[in-house]
Image (cartoon, rainbow, N blue to C red; front, side, top):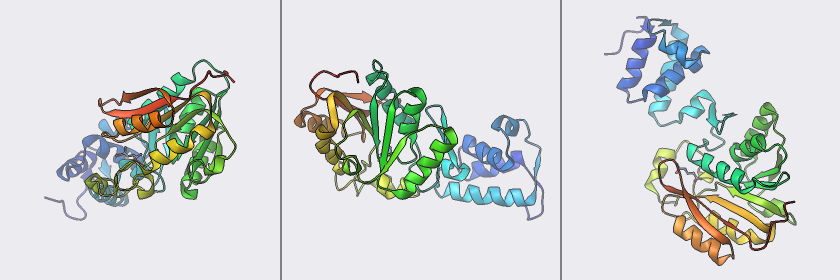
Length: 284
Ligand code: GLN
């Protein structure tokens, strides 16, 4: 039963309330930590601490939104990705842990050369581009997005983290005419427009998720435009849906890529597929 309006509510009781609504304990603890400006470890040790009414009200509101499916990252305004704390809001997709595998692959692919030219197509919050720049400060990192809203979020993250990335505005290859890169990475939209999974993602921008009837619209477009923008020996590394690896490998093969291969994510799902342009890298 819900306590009456002015009955004091302690943190422990509020966490029980969240549990009753089916909210994961970790999420509930993080909401309390965020609203109190404390670490989660503090919350864990202060079950008996009474929540002041305005705070309780704000927490209940956040809880209702979480129960409605709003990602925790939007409610607390941030999400950790590859060792970076990124600010996120509904203008951008929430960075996912599976995308960290794409960053690791790009770091590996460029291991030998100090001055790689890298581009992250459809950067969103800037997660991939910023993670690469942090780990390889010597790389020239460019990132594009067609959403001005997303670029504003990415640029703010770059400023706060003091990571210099070149941001360009436009659709896929369109703002990069005449440029060639050594590593191209992208986590494009790849969900089919009638995928029932989209209901669970309804609070995130549809433009970052949906890619035509089969979910391959943007992947096809990126692959088709890539040979003109890639140096000899350059790598194209793409994230895709759980059932798209074979289709993406076929598209890369048709576009003349070599060493085409797929990597699984942490859950063992085939998640990223990449290939290399023919010829020998110059090492730039
Ligand atoms: N990985 C996201 C999801 O299905 C989709 C991200 C994307 O389309 N790039 O939850």
